[in-house]
Length: 245
Image (cartoon, rainbow, N blue to C red; front, top):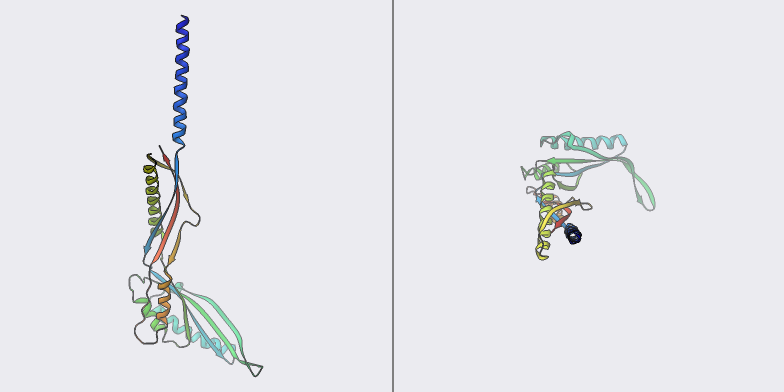
């Protein structure tokens, strides 16, 4: 009887030790994680362009200067509309009226009243017709005494490009975690935490391509203007914590 009780006590202690050991082992195993970072980058062609056009006129009176500027603007708007650009894609970004002076023999001389106005123009569909932008700029160049500047390229709807870059970022993070698991003799589990890094999504354009566009605008000959658009890069970065066992 006494031996039976002792045996039962010993068996209970043994079971407790085994259970405790298993729980401890599970605790150690469940605490094994690896934190990795993945960055995905997608390159796409732009489908829209934007640039600025400004007119600058001087006359004896403000009204006359503004009238001259308005005539130029009317010509510019007729040209942009003939290329299918909507009025909603043309925005006045600056309008300035001021007296213009110069200095002659230390004396300030009034030259006249100056009127300047700047428009921002958005051109869509440049991916469907790679000659559209060049032809438009050639026709705008017919109007004298204007300035075309600040040309840039973009994607009208970047959501798909960002979605692809995020998927690629996760794939790269997973591959990196798998490599660490193999190197450590472990098995990779499921992700238990996914965090966007700071400023995770961003877009860039190759500067060289933009500079080529500016150079094309300043061409001295009468050949059709070519505007290289380059490519846009959409990038996403993610931090992922994986289980390892």
